[in-house]
Length: 473
Image 1 (spheres, rainbow, N blue to C red):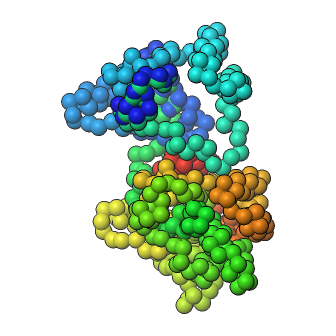
Image 2: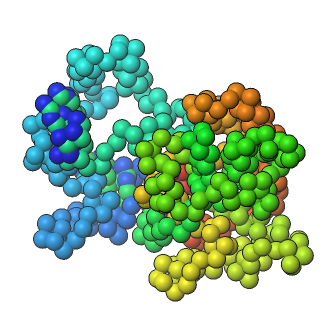
Image 3: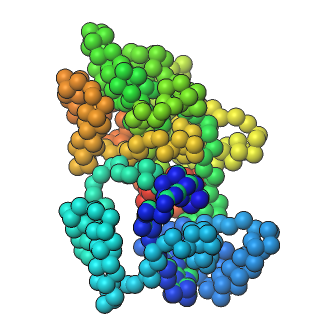
C-alpha cells in the first residue's frame, strides 16, 4: 500500500474504497461458505478447517489459539486463517484507513443494497467514468449475477494487470498524491466468520491437507517469434504440439509451406524449426528478449485429470502397441495399469520433493502444471488459455481470442488466415481427448474414488491456481 500510494496516489486524488461487515456475520459467512455451502455443492473441502470438520466449537477454540500464537511469533497464517482474521488486519488499516471510503457490507436482498449501488454510481461519476461503463457495472451488480459468470471466454481478461498484492507497493507506485478513490468492504465479524467456516469446513471432501506443494520449478519450454514479439510457454499435453507448429510457421512461413509442412500434422520429435525458436530457461529468455514485457506470451492449462489421462493413454497404452525400441517412456513399469501408475506417481513426486531422486521425462509429462514455466515468478507475464477440445462449442471462442492476439501483434492477415484454417482441421496426431481408449480409463478412475483423491492431492493447486472445477461423482 505504501508503494502504491507513493507511485500512484501521492496527492491523494484517488478515491479508494473498502468494505467492512459485522464481525460475527462475517465469521458466519466465511464458516457457512467454506464449510457448508461449497462442500455441499462440490463435495470438496478446499481448506483444512483446522481439522475440526463441521465442529464449529472446535474451530473457534482453535482459531483463538492460532491467532494468539501468530501474534507471539509461533505460527504463520494459512489461507484458512486469512478468511477469518479480524478485518483490521487487512489492507494495512493502521496506516491507510483514512485513505479509504469504507462501505459496510449489505446483502443484495436488503433495502440498503440499492442505497449502496447508488452511492457507488455517484463515486464513479465523480471520477468521470463514462456512463456506458457505469451502466454496465450497475447492471452487473443488480442483475443477480456477475457479467463474467456467463462468459465463455477461455482467458482471464485482466490477468494480474490491475492487481497489486502489496498495499505499500501499490501506494508508492500509483497513489503517492492520494488521488485514488479506494474502496474496502467490511462485514459483521461473526457472520463473516461463519461464512468462511461453513464454506471451507463443514462437509467432507477434498482439501489442501495432503496436497503436493505448487510452484516447484522443474521444466520450462519457451518458444518464441521475435519478429512478432509473440511467444508461448508450453506444458506437455496442453496443446503443446499444435502451438509448436503455429509458432514455427509464424517464425518462417515461406520456408514452412515450401517444405510442405502442415500445422495440423506437425510432430514435436521432427518439428520443422527444431530448437531454433526454443528456450529452456525462462529467466534467461526474459532477460534477453522480454525485459520490457513487450512480448505477448501465451500458455495453456488443462483440467488436471484430463491432462493426466491424455499423457497416460498416449505413453502407456497407445505407445505400448509399438515395438519396444520405439517406446519413448517407461510408465514406471506399470504398462497399462493406471492404478499402479498413479500410486507410483504419488510416491515419485513426494520422493522428488524430499530430494531422493530427480525427474524423468515420464515425470515431466504428469507433474503439476504449476511446476512448469516458472509459474511462481512469471505467471503474471502469461495470457493463460484453458485447453478446449476442437469438438467443443468453446473452441471457436478460443480461435477468435487467439486471432485477436495475432492481430494485436500485427501478424499479416494472410498468415492469420492460414493458421486459423489449420487449427480448424482438427486434432494433432498426438491428441487423445476424443479417444475411446481414454474413456475406458476415465470410467475406471471414476469408479475408484481413492484414485481420484490421490490425483486431486497431486494436482490440488492446479485446480486452485487456474480456477479449474474439482471432479464430481
